[in-house]
Structure formats: C-alpha cells, structure tokens
Image 1 (cartoon, rainbow, N blue to C red):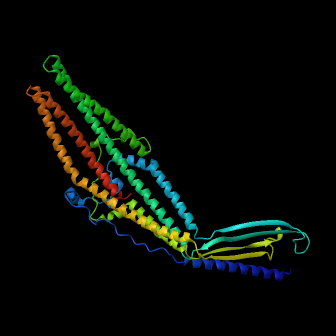
Image 2: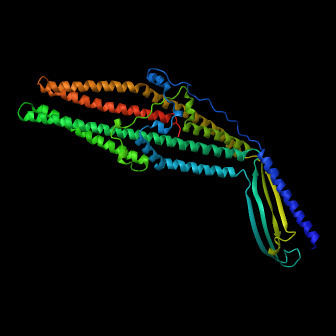
Image 3: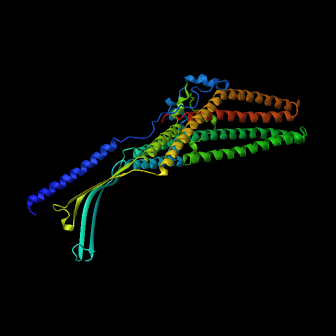
Length: 485
C-alpha cells in the first residue's frame, strides 16, 4: 500500500469517528431536552387549624407569647444546665441508634448516586481476540483455514436516552428518599436529645425522692425510738408502738424502691449516652438542675411543617409523584444506543496499523404494544401516592395533637405545682400540730400517723409535678421540631 493511500484511510477513519461522536452528542442533547411525565407537585393544605387550641387549659400559654419561639432557639440555649449539655454531647457522639441513622443516610445517598448515574452513558474499553479453525467443507475457499481476529474498542453499551423522563423520574424519587432519610436522621437526633434530657430529669427526681425517703426514715426512726422508750416505762401502749413501726417499715420500703428506680434511670441514661456517664455529671435532685428555657410555639401552627418527621413525609410524597412519572414513561418507547470506536485486525501486530480503524453505531427503539404489567405499575404508583399523602396528613395531625397536649400541660402545670406546694405546707403544719397534741397527751398517735402519711405523699407529689413541668418543656421542645443545631 502506498503512502497517499494510507493517509487517506487514516483521514477516513477519523471522519467516521467524528460522525460517531456527533451522533453521541446529538443523543445527549436530545436526552437533556427530554420531557418529564411526572405530575406537578403542589404542597397539600395542612389538615389542621391555623391557630393553636384555646380555652382554660391554655390560658398561661397565651401569656407566653413574648417567650422565645423554637426556631430562634439553639439546643445549647434551651438546655441551660452545663452537666446535662455534656451528657447530651456524649450521647450525640456515642449513641448507636443515632449512628445507625447516620449510616442509613450514607447508604441511601450512595443508592441515589447509583440511580443518578443511569442518566449518563457508561464508557468502556474492551479488548478481545479470537482464533478459530474452519474445516474445508465450511470454508468459502474449499480449504481448511485458521481465522484470527483481534480488536480494541472504546464504546457505549445499551445507553438508554431518556426522552420521556423515566430515568430522571427514578433519579428524582431516589433523591427525595435520600432527603427523607436525612430528615429522619434529624428526627432521630431530636428524639435522642429529648430522651436524654427526660431520663436525666427522671434520675434527678428519683434521687430527690430517695433523699426524701431517707430523711423521712430518720424522722420516723427517731419517733419510733421515743415511743419505744415510752412503752418500756409504761407511758405508751403497744398499739402506738406498732403503728410507729409500720411507718418505719414503709419508709424502708420506699428507700429500696427509689434506690431501684434511680439505678434503672442511670442505666437508661448510660444506654442513651452510649457510655457510662461519670458520677460528677449526674444530678443529686431536681433543685440541682438548671431548668430548660421556657418556650412558645408561636402564633401559627405552620411551624409544624418544619418538623423533621413531617418534612421527611413530604419528601416521600414528592418521591411518589416522581414514581408516577416513571410509571407513565414506561408506556412510551425506549430508545437505547450501543456504539463503539476502535481498531480491529486479523493479526495482533496489525491492530494499530493504518487501515485498521473500526466503528459501530447501533441505535434501538422498543415500542411497548401490550404489557399489562406497565398499566398495573401505573395504578400502583397512583395508589402509593394517595397512601403517602394520607400518611403525610396524618403526621401533621399527630404533630398538632402532640403540641396541643404539651401546651395543655404548660397552661396548667404551674397552677398544679402551686396548689401542691400549698398542700405540702398545710400538711406539714398539720403534722407538727398533731405531734404536739400527741406529745401533750391530748390526742392519740393515730392522728400523727395520718399526718405523716399525708405529708410524705404530698412531698412525693410535689416532686412528681416539678418533674412533669420540666419534662413537659423538653417535650414541647421536641414536638415543635427541636430548634436549631
């Protein structure tokens, strides 16, 4: 072969390769301009009242309108107790449930990357070689021969050009699932923070009640010792002695019970923190804990739409819309492209010599004529959209109810605590007077016993109500969406 002819063949091969590249670019341009068959998403109207509940149970919440609202409040500002902040920080670093939620986000993000990659062609370099003996009766020359073929190609295999948006709709659905999972991780974090705070406060209340039980036991043991001495000298009867003993035994039982509850609360706190919490970070009682900041839900219930679980439900709803688009696109033709550019030769040494250029271009269109599965899949996608929409609306209604319940507690708890404190003061004075009357011989020991039991129960009730007030602040913080990071 002379030199001019070799040059002409090389130019011809380059022209063919340029044509192949042009076809690919045209396909990409058409793909990028392809339409989408997904229905247009519009945010559904929230199926809840715009305003929060009104009435006697919410009178004090109305007075709290000047209090900081949740979007303006960071976690560090809300939880003012420094020790509790450190425990929360430990939990955020070590809690296994939160770690699983974060890993699930990574997994779904990778799945979104896989689905998104379907939009683009996969380019592969392929080298192949074959050697075959052809017998004489099958040979075109009538003689046996050995056929060799070698090739090296750079090509695209079965790339679907997304004219009708099927792949893009699936990509959008995967994106919404990823965003929903990220919001689920945020929701898990808020739940963890609020649960750590709740258990921390419960531990403080249990330890406070345990301290009360120990103090009560000391008082009752002192009274029992006095009555026992009076009994020994014949001043007091045996019935009063046994009545005093029942109060001592009851106090011992309370100590054992609240020792158990405090230990269980500490175990729960260690599990949430993912690590044993040092003793110097644990509360001694509720009075040692700086209370969380009082917050207001704001004037409108629209704040609930920013809750992570509701945002996750909305992302899934958007994904359902995208899936309808993918199901609709499956009813239309699919166009795919297989293309390769390379070199081929009957001899290995001739692969890259002049005249060995080779290319292939094989577009394919598939037109669905009858496939009942595609129509069934479309009906499934529409049913899924309605199901997810219903779940989204229910999530909003549930959130509204949770906030309303917390506001009902907030609107009445201060009155309950005030009444209980007044009860404790009255019963304490009753106990003092009853004890004086018994000591002076005016009344029997039965009045002292009743006053003791009433005082202890009232003091326990006061601790429970103070715990309920602080725990409800944490609850309101959580159900309003947890504030800023």
